[in-house]
Amino acid sequence: MTSLPREPGPKKLGLVIDLDTCVGCHACAVSCKEWNTGGVAAPLTDLDPYGADPVGVWFNRVHAYEAGDGMGGRTVHFPRSCLHCDEPACVSVCPTGASYKREDDGIVLVDEDLCIGCKLCSWACPYGAREYDGDAGVMKKCTLCIDRIYNENLPEPERVPACVTACPTSARHFGDLGDPDSPVSRLVAERGGRDLMPELGYRPVNKYLPPRPTRGGTDSAERGADPLPPEPESGGGRFLRWLDATLSR
Amino acid sequence: MQPAYSVIFFTSASGMGYGLLILLGVLAPAEMIPDDRTFGLVSLGIALGAVTFGLVSSMWHLGHPERVLLAYTQWRSSWLSREGVLATVTYAPAGLFAIGWIGIGEVVGFWGVCGLAAAVLAGFTVYSTGMIYASLRPIPAWCNRWVVPVYLSLALFTGALWLNAIRLLFGHPAADASLVVVATLLLSVSLKWAYWRYLDGARAGSTPETATGLGSIGKVRLLDPPRTQTTYVTQEMGYRVARRHAAKLRRYASVLLFALPFVLTLATVATHPWIAAGAAVAAALSGSVGVVVERWLFFAEAKHVVTLYHGAEAA
Ligand code: SF4
Ligand code: SF4
Image 1: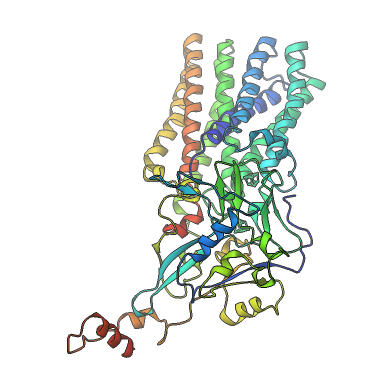
Image 2 (image 1 turned 30 degrees about the vertical axis):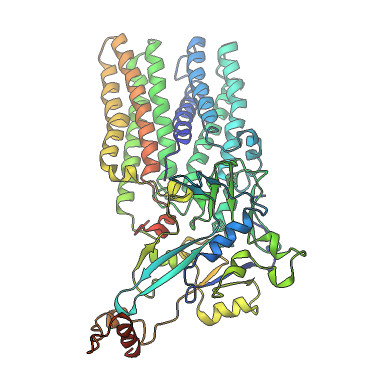
């Protein structure tokens, strides 16, 4: 049924991604690929994997952006995957019922046995979260590791999405964003978690925590005009210059 | 957006077919076109043939065409499903209309009602085709009020071009036959022109800043893409070839779709019947190629907001 749940449950499982701590190591993306190429949506097909032009299905991809200029500017590593939206048009456009949003926990899934591979859902997703598997002829997407989070064969602490266990800086948090008192919801409230492209009205469940302000403020207009710290007098070499710059902040 | 050839052929061919079906279903029962049975056979044959060719070609790009019946199930939410249901249902009154006209030689009464019903359903089918595009919020070039009217008017116009060609081949008087063509042409030109004007003037609703939520820090630029090669998303949504040539392609589309058919249709009025028929066929062919170019451009010019994550500055 591609109509959205009429009475969605209170539970909204999702991820909170901390853009302040993410270091862009791609561990989450690799671990996602590793788990899911053996999971419910398996395989995450790679075509021409060792050739000149490999192309394959990934559920999670890590971008890097520069935001702002000068001293207030930041490099931000930015993992992007399905946001398990509350208004997922990817689901309502699906003609076959292959795409659906679960009433119980809000997870958006594709039933590969029903998918005709028309790709319309991928056009309807603003976030590029759906990747077509040309080999299997069906659409694939993040399952929020449905086969981990409810998996009683795994020890309790491992019942979280693979990306969350893999992150070395704990930049990824998994939980119930429908419960205002859950740790993830409190984190969102404290840190001013954001929706991506809220103007499109998809109401994503996943939230992104913006980078904390740099020491000395983030006003790039002001800070950008700061002169570079003077060269250390002794000449010093790279390390000393770095030390000098760091200390004189 | 990457132009999908099967979808381009589908919307062009079935649009023309439904447009022709609408005109036949309305004009025949109203006795505004001759009820000659051979004429019925040829014109309904072309209409339903084009529709069927289009529907079949739309299945080429499916990953699992053998599961296509599943696409009838989600009409409550999906315009694609609605289009499938309406397209199929249209065959019923259209078939009866064809039996009445070609088999029995009747286009009024019950058979006329079948024609009208086929026309109405055909109209709704084209409407849902337009709505598939017009409901995609991540593609502002499609999600606007001009898209559905353009689909409807181009269906009528290309249908009218073929109706005109068939009528002149059957030796019907040129002047009144060409009236519908000119009327639908003027409507289509104005709507398509308004669409292009809208596109050129549209302000980007989404930006790299809203896409990443980092706007409060400052301007956002892509530093490193999340890939070394292309991905499904960058191939499908990041198609850019035509955008660079948009102005030229718009000119080609306008000449083939509007200017040539207009001149050729005017030429039908004041000439020898055989030259008139030739001109009308040429107009129909030109219009049909033109609508394919127009559809190709409709895809190629459309930007998807996901490109903002991959370095686009506006969408
Ligand atoms: S991020 Fe895309 S695929 Fe995921 S629920 Fe939202 S619209 Fe659907
Ligand atoms: S590609 Fe599959 S899941 Fe996506 S809309 Fe088509 S049938 Fe539904």
